[in-house]
Amino acid sequence: MTANDLKINEFQNNNKILIPSDLKQYFLLINGSNDMPLDNLYEFYSINRIFNEFKDWNGVSDYNKLEFQQFENVFIFGNYEFNFYSFGIELSNTLSSINRIFIFCGSEYRIIANIFSEFIDLYLENPEEIYV
Image (cartoon, rainbow, N blue to C red):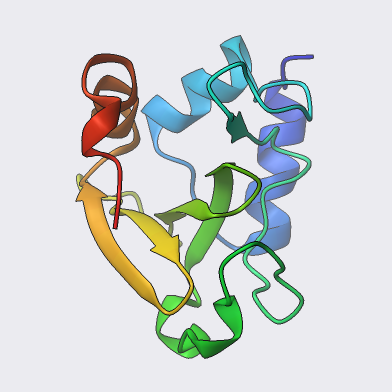
């Protein structure tokens, strides 16, 4: 089920952030993978499931070793192989031309894109490059 402007505004207000236009279009048109992994084992969350609370984050990888305070503005929007890898986007209360996309695996991470649409292009065209 796709999101609407009201749901997006509610998310922005509750989290005191602004959603960039490419991510907003994603929520309006697709809004996740229906709470299920896709055939390729990627799962993308709806706006209702995106979170930035790492304290109870579980997965195959040990995320407890990650220094969460440095990612306070990173919101997790998906995973691969049941949280073996998790994907996050950096959001803030001002619109920016850069909203870094992170891939996490336990205590390791790296930046894999500078904007959400760049991540989507990578996922569609070169998914083998999405790794830590």
